Image 1 (cartoon, helix red, strand yellow):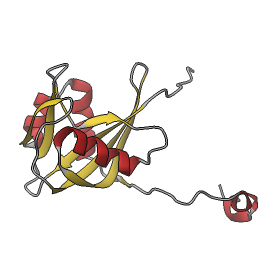
Image 2 (spheres, helix red, strand yellow):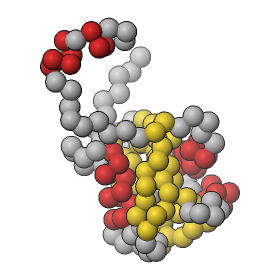
Image 3 (cartoon, helix red, strand yellow):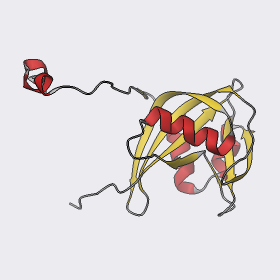
Length: 152
C-alpha cells in the first residue's frame, strides 16, 4: 500500500442559490470551468478558508453547510468539497477568475472537467453529508489523560 503525504489542501465549494442553481467559474489561466476553489492557508480553519476562496474568486458571501467529499490526488494533494449556500453579494469574477455564472446542476456537470464533475455529482447526491464543525479551543493534555476517549 502506498502512503499519501498531503502537501497541499484545496477547498472547493458547490454553491447553490435559492433556485437550486450552481455557481461555476472560468479560470483565466486554463480557460476551464470549475467550482470556486483554492488552497487552504496554513493554520486557516476550513470554514474561513472556503468563505475566503469564494469571496476571492466570485465575490459572493456564503454559509458553509456540509462537508460533501474528501478527495486525494497524487499531483494535487487533497481536496475538500463543501456544500455552501449563497447569502450575500452578486456573483462577479475577480482574482484568477475570468467569468462566473449561475447554471443548473445538469449544465454545471457538463461544463466541468471530469474529476470535478464527479465531485459535483457526489456532493449533490450526498445521502449523509457531514456538518462542518470547527473545534476551538484545542483540547488540553488533561482531556487526553481522562477516560473521555476510552470508548474509541
